[in-house]
Image (cartoon, rainbow, N blue to C red; front, side):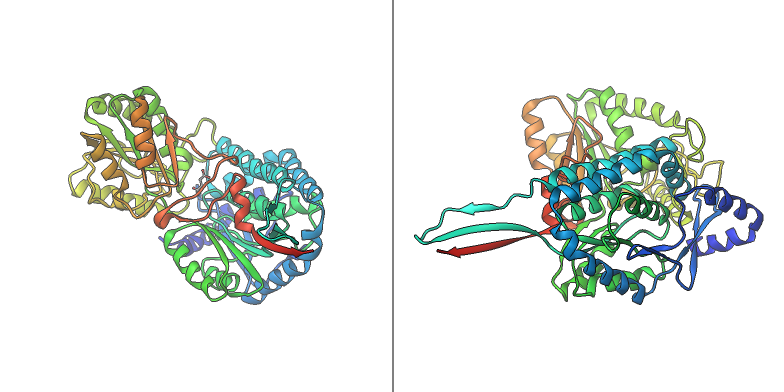
Amino acid sequence: MSRRQFVGLGLRMRTDARSARQQAQAMSLLHEDAYIDGRWFSGAERFEVLDPATGEAVAAVARCTADDTRRAVAAAERALPAWSTLPARERAAALHRLVEAMAANEDELARLLTREQGKPLAEARGELRYGASFLTFFAEEARRLYGETIPSPRAGSRLLVLRQPIGVGAAITPWNFPSAMIARKLGAALAVGCTLVVKPAEATPLSALALADLAEQAGIPAGVFNVVTGDADDAPTIGRVLCEDPRVRALSFTGSTEVGKLLLRQCAATVKRVSLELGGNAPFLVFDDADVEAAVEGCMTAKFRNAGQTCVAANRILVQRGVYEAFVEQLGARIAALRVGPGFDEGVAIGPLIDEAALLKVEEHVADARARGATVRVGGRRHALGRTFFEPTLLEGVSPEMRMTREETFGPVAGVMPFETEAEALRMANDSRAGLAAYFYARDVGRVWRVSEGLEYGMVGVNTGLVSTAEAPFGGVKESGLGREGSHHGVEEWTELKYVCLGM
Ligand code: SIN
């Protein structure tokens, strides 16, 4: 069932839909209008945002047109001179105030996030803190945006390099982290003096709009941060304006590889700076010398965070023969113990998938694997809760030709394959056009170096299942993207170097 058909279902269940909406409406940070030039904008039409756990409509959000998007770009352009010339410490102070506002409203933001995205409430809180950590990091970084002086080859001249904001930026963000993926881009862009137009995913615009409200409360001026909303039909129109408008100088996108390639092509006409964080197909390797218990723990994080709906999710689990049985045994026990349910329920570890289409894809991956010889050790079916819930699953006998090894499953399904040698493991791990994150567990120091260097991935977790942090560069190689977010490298996506040759 497509998301649109799902909307229809929501309308048929009118009484329930109203109560879900009323619950959401009670939240002061719930906005259904887009946010352009410091004003709430209702648009001529609306689209429904659904609770993925129930299919109920939570809000009816403004559909922005191409003209609305151009107005947002114009507002960002007008706001640019004042914002970019504000002393860095004042921009930093505004970002710090936004962080404080997020902390003061964490309960409501977390409930909104769980309501529209489905993840367990504790994970929603974690996401908010993760997002805020980027705002804090870049607020600090704003004050260290150093240039260079270069020893001149000639007497009578001085060579300088300035780092300046690139200008108006655009961000297109995904539904799996509806708040943090915006904060990660917003923090870097605003810290260096850019202004921003954000198009949040159609499934999860509410966290973005709540952030806009808090940004206004934090004193971020009109036009500096704009949120343009639209449904799945509007996304190509809005995206095209953001890519093709010459006033937009940089585009940052997190989402699928397919859409990333399209946006990259569309940005070519205006030669924009493009940063892309696209799909991964992360290998997770466990070597014979690994601490198996720690590897199981890391695998649970790498695979089941956000019900497996992360770009850095472990998608292929490769285990060396000597520890294979022990690892699979322990992993199976941990997976079987995961509690599934709506994100608001106490103790839930696995929430719903984002929509019915996501569930169908997971089902197809499991069916394809089984048809090609994989066996189900745990789970393997839709959960008894129905709708968008899938049983946490462990499959054995997975092989390289299966869909679940070639594509991201984006669901709570772990597939395990054995290997014999380090060389074989590296060959299997690198057999992918994606190159975002990889993980491995080993204790031999020589192996740790060899495998870290040999993995063709932008990020490698060694003896850990979680690499994401504001302090480190997040991004991929090969078809997983361009550029880096987070860390001091993150400001490069939003700045230009200007060489000044000073004759004296
Ligand atoms: C993503 O899934 O795109 C982001 C995950 C992360 O930041 O850890």
